Structures are given as C-alpha cells and as structure tokens.
Length: 164
Image (cartoon, rainbow, N blue to C red; front, side, top):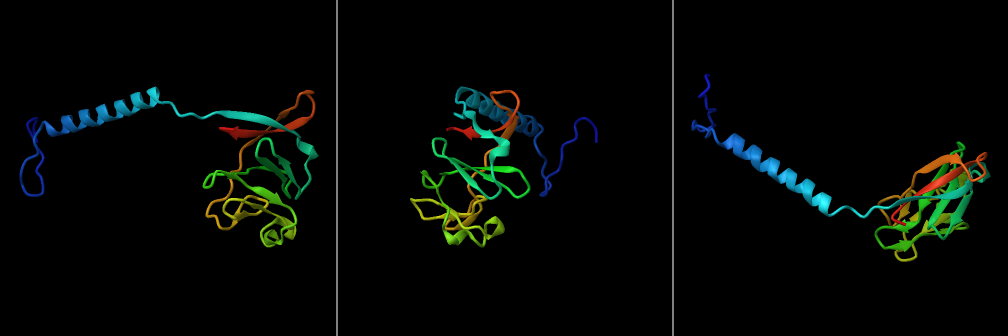
C-alpha cells in the first residue's frame, strides 16, 4: 500500500491513477459553470410587504379581504393571524371567498361556513387554506411580520407578497 498503490476493481483490473483527479476537475468545472450561469441569469423574485392594519383589529374566524393584493387574512382561534395568497398557481386565477358556502363546514374552525373557490377550475379550500376538493395543494400562506405601524405605537400586521 505504498505511494504507487492502485485500487482494484471488482473484476480484478486496476483503476487508472488519472481517473480520480479527472472526475474531480470535471465536477468542479461543472459546479463553477452553474454558479456563473446563476450569476448571469438571476431569478426574478421580488418581495414586498403591505400593511394589513392593526393586528388587534382582526376577529377570530373572520376572513378579511384585500382584493388589490389578492390576499385574505383570517383570525385564528389561538389569536394568531393567517394570510392567504389567493393566486392559484395551477390556473393563474384568483380564488374567491364564498362566506355562505356550506362545503367548508366540516373543514373550518367551529364548523363555520365558507370556502375559497377557484373560478377557473372549481377547486375549493377551507378558510385556513387547506385543499378540500379539486386541488392537491393548499393555497399559499405568506409570512406576516408584526411591527409598529405608521403611528409608531400600535402593532400592525405586514403581509409578505412574493412577485406581486
């Protein structure tokens, strides 16, 4: 097992000593190319936050619409808020909140009525954005950042929007 040792393959032949360094250089070249390609073609991702209002102004089990943002905010039973991005990736349509629709009773907190429905496909989701019918994935739930509002005193809910 000296410096000239060459590994044996299964069939008893020897692996050429140049193979390891060649594979290493090829892989390094490939990954350097990937990094350069990524630097020349950056992903078009824009993240903005919009002020949804005072965090304490939302009611438990109530869905508040922000149609200019294609977002809904729901007050959860534990006092938290959940933002729901109504843009449906599969159809490029915007889901609508149907507050009196009974299809959501079995899925919504406290058995409340209401579903989000994609007008293009007819798929439905609960008020918590969970898929009910016609969809395999939940609606996206953007991050909510809690910070002082414009007055500097009251805590506001700022909803993250990705590629608005």
